[in-house]
Each structure stands twice: as structure tokens, then as C-alpha cells.
Picture 1 (spheres, rainbow, N blue to C red):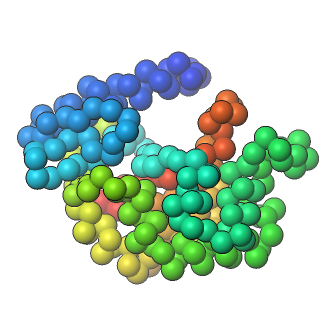
Picture 2 (picture 1 turned 60 degrees about the vertical axis):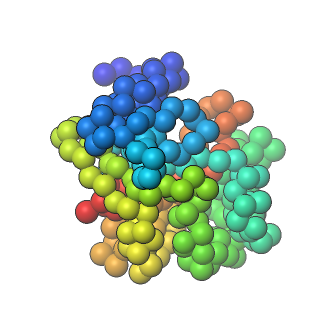
Length: 209
């Protein structure tokens, strides 16, 4: 398959946001909405649908800067410290690394952020799913098996009510009572420092079961 270069990644993203999303829209009777400044990928004038193409167990659902996330969520200082240390910055020198693993971060900061997430589950999930665009549902396209699934925004909110955010090695996961992940938070992995330190959220296929 070869190494996934930045150019190949760009071409894949373009294909997903044009051809593959158009195919899904045609399949379910929606008009495609193009553009990176909206979460709406297709609409029929009443329903606003976000389309997620999966090749694995999860895919990106929301990406924002640390500054924007901190401002919108109105985080306290301990949670801000967690975001800054976990997502990183050019000013950090952690034995040659520009960020910290969760296990290296002061537990007070970790617990503060987890407390915030668990006390504000709907607020956080609304941001990463909806972000003010009145998303009525998410369509999950399983590219490997050519299957479509859909979940409404209201059902997402209902399903997360009994879930909890937990810290794992590589990020923070929203898990149900069967230990299945619905969403997770991680840091970006890009080498380019212009967009390396952002706050990145993934949606998992478990949500659609």
C-alpha cells in the first residue's frame, strides 16, 4: 500500500468529501452540501445530515484549536493545563518531546478534565457532533462492507447519558456500560507545527449498533 504521505492524505480527504459523500447523498435522497466550514454534508431541506466514511473502527468527527476549545468550553485552569500539556506546543521540551502522555501529566489536571467531561457530556458531544449546524443525524458509511447506518442526534444524546469519559493510554474515551467506545479525544499527529497541536475527536462505529 505504501506510506501515507501528506499529498496522498489530501487526495483521500478530497475523495471522501466529494465523490463518496455525493454517492451517499444520492443513495438516501439528499442534496450534497460542499465546504469545510459546515458539518452538514447533505440535506433535504428539513434534515441536516453529517456523513462519516469509515474504513476502520473510528473516524474524525471534530477538529479545533486548543484556544477555541478552551474558550467555548470555558475550562478551568487545571483542565487548561491538561489540554496544553497533552496536545502540546512548540514551547514544551519534555525530554525532547513537544507534549506529554497522560501518564506523565499531574493527576490533578487529568482528574479535573475528566470531571469536566463527565459533568458536561451533552455540551461536549453537541460541540463535536453539531457545533451549531443543527445536525439531525449522522450517517455511517462502512466502506469495506458497503453498508449504511444512521443515528439521529436525539438518539446520540440518549445513548451517552449512561456513558463515562475515561483516560486511556492514547487519549480519553467515552465508553458505555459494556466498555464500548462511542467517541474519543486525542491530539493531532501531524508533523507540521502549524496544525500539530489541535484538539481532535473521533466517532466510533459502536455508536451505530
